Length: 103
Image 1 (spheres, helix red, strand yellow):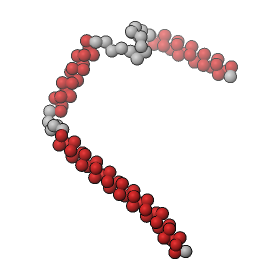
Image 2 (tube, helix red, strand yellow):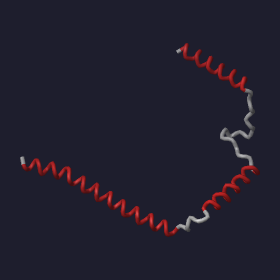
Image 3 (spheres, helix red, strand yellow):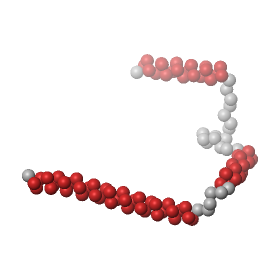
Image 4 (cartoon, one colour):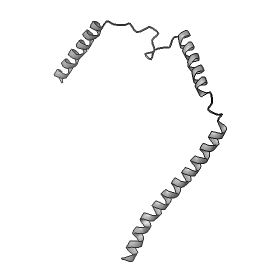
């Protein structure tokens, strides 16, 4: 009976101790790395200026070079009137309903 209790305590205590030790080691290593990282980075004064400069450069690049579309084609996507879009939606819905009726 006492052997069962010590066995149960061991089964609970050993994984708990290992978890706590691992979490502590991870926390210590993370904090040390974070302070080293903080020391190696320049001060954050002027970050807004840097972000604004980068935003302006990206904006000028986007205006000069066209961004390729994700479809792989170089043709621009034509703008459709709302009535045309509604017609296409209605046609797709009818095709969907027809396919569903078949199955």
